[in-house]
Figure 1 (cartoon, helix red, strand yellow):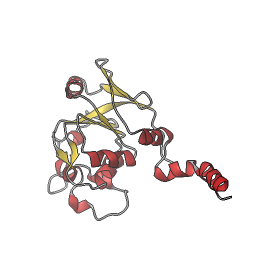
Figure 2 (cartoon, rainbow, N blue to C red):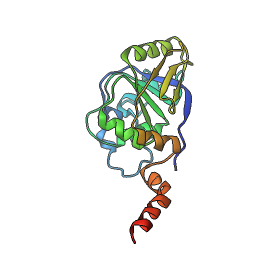
Figure 3 (cartoon, rainbow, N blue to C red):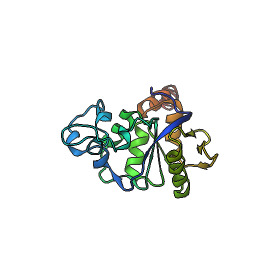
Figure 4 (cartoon, rainbow, N blue to C red):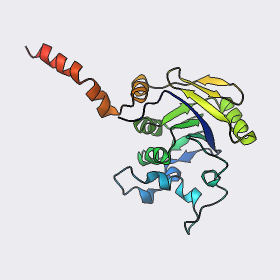
Length: 197
């Protein structure tokens, strides 16, 4: 069982870059591990650190003015290869939500499978959100999964977002795919009992 996702209000970390691919999210040299542990340490590794392993001060994840469990990214986030490790890195860093105007389909599904909610918003809403964060780094968003809405609390702007109903149910209940099947154990056993006669 994972932590249930219902409503989240959080500050945001703005990544104002478009076409961020999975190799930028987690470079290929870190893909040898088979456990999800430690991937958050290497999220955006080549943007966060120089060749000597020293933090690059200009990169937003190294800026102490920004914090939160919501990553606000530019259009076309998660393109490139199908590596699930990219979602592992996002989740491992502590992000619960990624907001963008467009996600690559495979990344979107990988994120949902790792309890990270990808929220697709209009380009207008995204631009307004970036503007709010730039004006005040303490601005927050509220994501209501049950209502499927995201609100820019600085402006009051609200948009609805789509999500697969099965994945929504899993997030609301803190289920991964195995947990979901286990939650249906009595139903499955009842069905087998009734149809084995």
